[in-house]
Image (cartoon, rainbow, N blue to C red):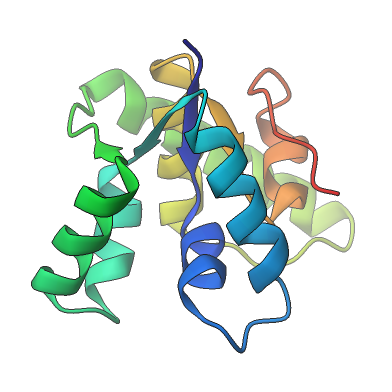
Length: 138
């Protein structure tokens, strides 16, 4: 069974009926959830906590069968830091969107656990995580 790591933007789109990507996100999560093990990283969990109550998050995770994999050893943090720096260097030399540290932690966590990444923010991951398999969006 393949691990699919969900980025925060996928979850927010899934939960928000008014989001422009709601239907796509729901379809992808529903389709993949039937055959793959979907996971969250601790940074995604933390970002969810900023907009939902613990009971809402816990209920949604229980209903969806999505697991939080809490393990983030030093190698994950180191990789996130290295790629954050590499991205900042690339950003200075060309037009790339500004990103936050959580984005790099999410990708480093997926990479560490051998998970594919499902996200709407592909630019950051293509630039500095070329080996992390990303799920193509329709």
